[in-house]
Structures are given as C-alpha cells and as structure tokens.
Length: 186
Image (cartoon, rainbow, N blue to C red; front, side, top):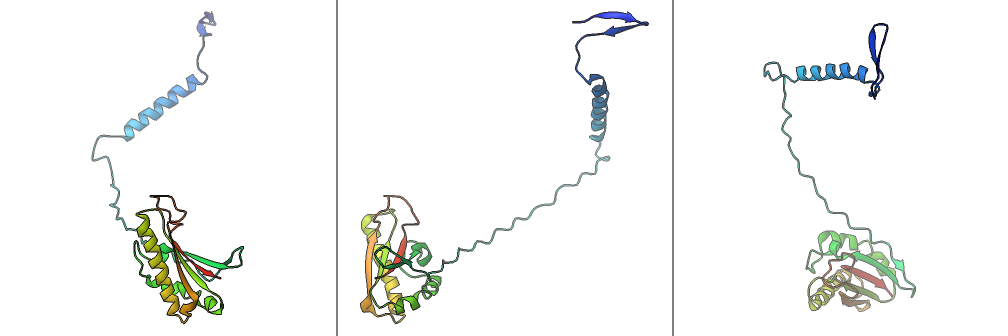
C-alpha cells in the first residue's frame, strides 16, 4: 500500500520497505566496488605466491606390543587361565612362534614352574577356512607353545595339548578374538 502526500514541499512515502535499506545499500555498494577493485585482472598488479609443494612422509607403522602375560585369571572351577591372541604369537596360517612371542611367553614361565598340577595348552581358530584345516592349525599352534614351555624346563609330562579349532566360531567370519592360545593351570 502506497500513500503519497506532500508535507513542506516534498513527497513522503508510507509504503512497506525493508528496515535498514537506506543504510545498507550504500554500504553494500562500497564493499562491492572495493572487492572488484582488489580483484584486478592485471598480472603486474598481483603478487600471487603459490603454495609450496608438500612432501608426504609415510607414517611409521609399528605393531602393537604383545600384552603382558604375567596374569592368570582364576576360573569358577579353580583353574587359572592366561589367554593370548594367536595373532601375536604366530604369523597368518603358521605354527612357528614369532621371536617377540617367545620373549613374552617367558614372562609366565615362572608361574607355570611354581604350579604343581597339569598345564593345558589349548589352541583355537576363527571360522575362516575348512574346519579340518582350522582344527589341525590350532593343534600345531598349541604344540608349538607346548614345545616352547618344555624347552623352559617345564616337565613335558605335565603339559597337555588340546585343539579346539573353530569351536564356537561363526562360519566364514574372521574373528580375531577366536584366534588364541590359552594356557590353563589345572
């Protein structure tokens, strides 16, 4: 709605307009003109400096340390169990102890020597691969840990190897928590 009427020699508009329009318009025009003046197409007026070339340094990847095996957990039946992931002890699809695994296993040897009962070495695997292969792999891995313990002056007559294979694991699922060797003091 627009009403014009004359007061003291000038027309006054009483229509709708945005608040602050009269202040914003000159300010916006000044900013626009300032920006266009600053963005000159003249190469001589510009002092463009390109960014330096980046050099990418690959990150240093270090395997997580083997968790300490010095603690045995007491089960409800009174036996004590120490569990370690087979991923720390062995390479993929291998039954040869890695050098750092032998060092870590040395930490629990004194507790095993003090124990006067049977020692079970139980091997497990995940559900990847054939069931027969996983059962055999878990047996060979448990036997490798048994051979290490026997080499540390623990009587072989007290050591017993059990292979569980993929018992309790989902078929065709790579589950790192299932790939493990347990040392059970009975």
